[in-house]
Structure formats: C-alpha cells, structure tokens
Image 1: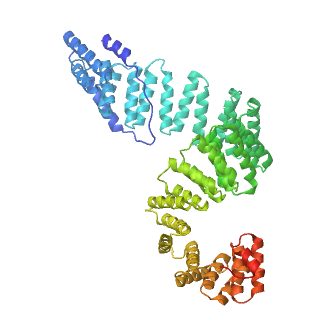
Image 2: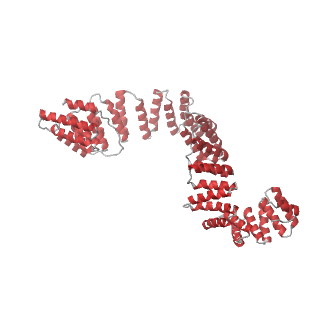
Image 3: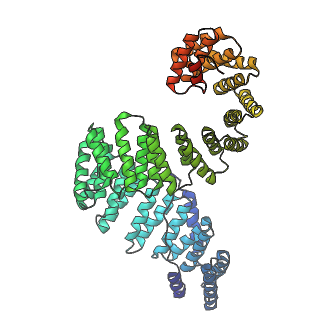
Length: 587
C-alpha cells in the first residue's frame, strides 16, 4: 500500500537517541515473547477487500492528524481501527509502535515494531524504533541486536554503526565499542572523533599506554591543533613522565606562544621538578593572558589561599592577585579574591580597599560587606566603620551584625546616642542568638555609662554576666565604673578580684582591682597590685594611679615622681598638671 509508505516517509523522520546506563540485564524470555507476538501479527489472515483498504487508509490519515497535534491517545485509537482491517501493513504497524512510544508504553510498542520489520526488513526507521524501545526498557542486548539486524539487512546503512557504538559505550561495553570503531574505520577510514573516543575508552580502562598511543596519532594527524598537545601532556604527567610532558608543551607553545593553559601546565610541571623560579614565571605568564578566564584564575588563587600562610608562596600569590585585577578590572570577583588573599597575609588596608572596589561592581554579597566592616574595625578606622556599616544596612537592614558595627563605630566616635540606637536595633534582631545578644549588651553597657544612664548600663552588664559570669570585659568595666561612682563597692571588689585571679598578669585588670581597693580606702593592698601592674606596663593611667596611692600612703615625693612619669606618657588625667604643680592629690 504505497500511500502508507509515502505518508510515513513524508511525516516521520525518526531519530533514535541512544541513551542508557550500564549493567541492565537482557531478557531472552521477553525477546522470545516479543517475536511470538510479532509472528502473531504476521500470521496468515484473510486478504482485506478493497473497501477495507480504503477505510483503513482513511482511518490512518485521520490518525496522522491527531498524531501531528500530539493527541496520541486519539491517534492510537484510529491507528488500531485501521490495523484491525489491514494488520499486515508494515507502515501502519510502525506508526502504532511509535504512538505507543510517545505514550510512554514501550512494552506494548515492541510487538508492532517487530511486526513492521517482519513485513518490511529493508526500512531503517523500523529497526531504529525497535532499538529505542529496547533501550528505554534497558534491554541493551536486544537494542544492539536491532542495530546489527539493521546493518545486515538494510543496504547502505553503515552510518548506524555510530549508533551501535554509542549504545555499547553507554553500557560500558568498551571492547564491543572498540570492535565497532574498527568496523567504522573499515567503512569510512580513520576519523578524528573515533581516535578521541578510542582514547577515552582506554582511559576508562586505565590503559594509559594505549591512551598515549592514540594521543600520538592525534598529534601526528592534526599537528596544528594545540589542544591535542595539551591533552597529551596531561597524559604524560599522569604517567609521571614529566620531561616528556614538558617537551610536548613546548611544541604546543611553538604553535600558540601565549596559550595560557600550556603555561599553567608547565608551571605545575616545573614546580614538581623543584624549579620554582620557572614555575612562577609560567603561572604569571598565564595570568597575564586575557584568554585565561576569570573563573579559572579565581580557582587557582583559592588554591593558593588554602596554602597560606606560607612565606614561600606569599609574594607570587599577591602578584597573581594584582594580575587578575589588571586583566579583569570589571569583574567583582577579581577584587574579592585578591582581598581574601591580602587579608590572610595581613595587608588589611589594601584588602579592605579591594573589597570596596568589588562592591562598586556588585554590592549584593553580604560576606564581602561583612569583611569590609570587620577590617574597618581592625584598622581602628571608626569613621570608615560608620560609613560602610550604614551602606551595608541600606542593603541588609535585617542583618544584626551591621547594626553592631555601626553602633560600635558611633561609640568609638563618642556619638553615644546614635550608638545606643543602633545597638538596641541590632539587639532586637538577635533575640535567637544569645551569644550575639551578649555582645550587644556589652557595648550597650559601655554606651549607657557614657550617657550617664547608669541604670540601663548596669542592666546591660548584668545581662551579659547572666550569660557569661566570667566575661572579662564586663567584670573590668562594670567594677571600674561602679568604683568611679562610689556605688555598690563590695560588688565592684568581688568582680575585680575574680578577674585578677583569672588573669594575674594583666596590668589593666590589676589596675582596676587596685583602683577599687583605693576607692575603698585599702591603700596598702592597692599599692601591692599597682606595683605588679607598673612592673608589667608603663601605661599613663596605671602610673598615675600608682602615684595617687603613694600620696595616700604619705610618700609624696615618690608620688610626684610617678605623676611626672605619667605626664610624659601624654595620656594621664585632666588633673595631672595641677597635681604636679601643687604637689598635691586632686580627684
């Protein structure tokens, strides 16, 4: 029935996609059953009448319309009605099988595909459909058989050897794939992709010797393709044939002198040989190339970062970071990775400035802003800390960490009202993080004290101590401020004493405890701790306090000497000049 054949070939150019994952078992019983079903399809039936043929053809044409519209269920019903009238029509059996395929029912499709082949074993599309149906059911042996039957029965079908090879490759049947490649080469001659595919198989089989042999063929056949030289160098390197790898890469660079990937590989090879000078030269050459993409450079720099701190690679790391910025000035990640590296090696200001360049290009990264304000704090640049934390808060208003740094910056700048406002907002956002809440309370204690809101200051300090009873900062500041106010002196003494027991060589804590004792009139005991403190530190405040205690103990000349020393430090109290001039204690 020629009409069926013509419509079929005009509307259905079917491409089989060979895909699957290996190790599925072939079922001989299913294959046998399928053949029996196909035989049943082709069993001798009464020859349809001309009227039946016409009706069948009309049903087929109607079915094709629904098929084109992707209404496969309706198409199948019409095809099946046509099939009931002309069951031995190859094209019709094919179309029924194909429709079942689109309905994701390969089991039902197989008998019809086999029937189509039985009725016309010269049509390649029938075999291709059957191969796909078996592949979809992971019946890989049966799929391979379908391809082999196609190649045997259909003239000029050698192109489908590639499909068969791909099927074997998908199943990891490497030996069968290699044999199929031999059949292809006999038919089409030596092909570039076949050599590449064969090499890949040998690599999967861990047959490095044969993989290298295939690489040599590629170089010989395509001597102007640098990528094959690079691939071969990788194989030599993997085989610990460093010198041969270097020779191949030098040949690649004769073809493409600025090839960054060749220079990168050479850098690694020279490093393996201990030639660090040449290794650094090659990696810098690679980084100087615009052909080496930013992501590759970032990955390499991250690898350097993982090895830091390491004086041996610190300078080359910094040089590579600068080259990355130079060659990719519009890439935020170039500045960010350079800043990461500079932070680790202690170049804090340079790192902070590069982070700022990164956020000019892309301000969406929370972690970069976090690094910026952290570095501002480490650099003790309170004005920058305020500015940058406010910019970060415009982008991340619900991130408590930026409120913390903003409040801290204002506190350092002595803008205590703004500090309290920021710190209270951050504290509200941190209710689920007790550790962070404690940090906010610590800063609030200091800020409220500076505002002389002593009630809120004490409440903030008490909140910290309820979470961390030995918090050194709070024990020191809380006890000192209480002593300055002359309030709750016993509590101040207990806190400062506990702190000194925990940190017996810290001059600041020794001074605080001594000052509490001084305010309580325990001058002799205070002198003991201040002598320990001045033996460790020449801080002006500590020295001045020592002079005050000596004065209270009647040692006025010694007190004057200590006040004079404190003045030389330039950070003593506002009374220091008057004390020295009048040789008298003022508080």
